[in-house]
Length: 102
Image (cartoon, rainbow, N blue to C red; front, top):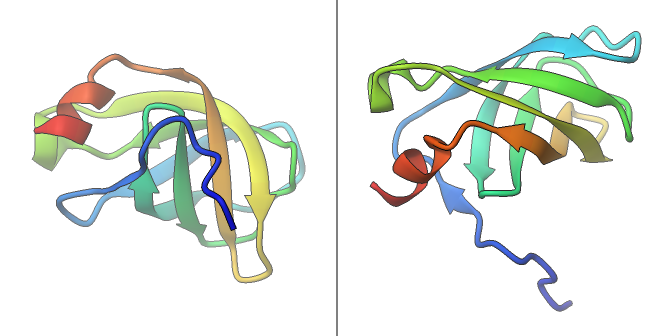
């Protein structure tokens, strides 16, 4: 299988969680652990399943890494039964580069 990603996903240097602050579906997911991320997306292990194509807003709890939280928005592109979700960003703060390449 060929990797079709335009940007490389990287593992976060420390354990980092995310708070799901909004979803446009009736999902009960409210948080997740970040597995990896890139400039264009994130892979989360969530506390409950998200719906594919759902729009979500996230607060990435990066205070211990870069001194402040990061905010992101995007669409769920892939889900799993165990609460995993791949999210394609439609918005992310520019400080994501600091996190990715520090």
